[in-house]
Image (cartoon, rainbow, N blue to C red; front, side, top):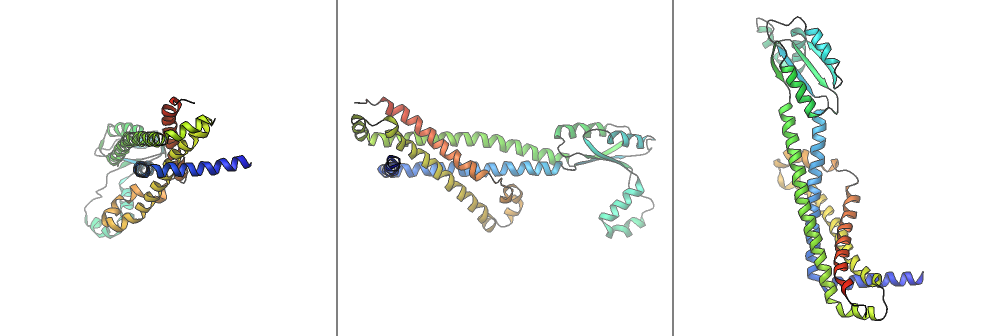
Length: 303
């Protein structure tokens, strides 16, 4: 136990010494890691909230087909047929009188205007409500099928809005993967070189340790921990900066933040992102350090 405590003390001192040896480059590496995970956090939150916005739009999604004259005689049968589809929660046949009642429930101030009209302006329609979780492709296919039915004059839905949200979601996903990959590689490459610089600067000390019989693990672990801490601290600082940005953005963006809020709502952030980001940072730092140590120190003569 005493040996373990002694080694941990040595490890902490050596990691700090490694940081002080090349303070400037270590700080540069830390800044790159912070920037990398800050951008990843922003894209991740945007992607999550776009997914939720899409799911919310899909919940209870409705497509309504309006029929002109002459009215098809089989409208009730058509409504029942649509209601039997497995992706459809319900299909309603809405006759003109029912449509007028629904309209006045939504716009009661327009009753006097409607009363002045010589006839009921509302056409009969079939309103199809889809089940939650129905895919956009299936909704699009059913909408096209509904629009091609005999007697249909117009189909109303928010399908175009849904397709735009879906397109933005795909774009954000692709940009996130591309940009996140580049930034992670940049962080990885930077830490690899930082650890290599630190190792070179302590080359004589490493040679002496090997001469007196120190194991590779004893020598390499402080260098690996240097990278792990760079990644861990960088990811933690990035998350803190990310949360601070979400708090301050409404104060500085003013009215713009009101339109962007659905994309950056912090309460929509998964609880596990903090505990995902930190290990990810430590992993990037650890793998970078191991790569550097393996390429450099393993080539050093042991005596």
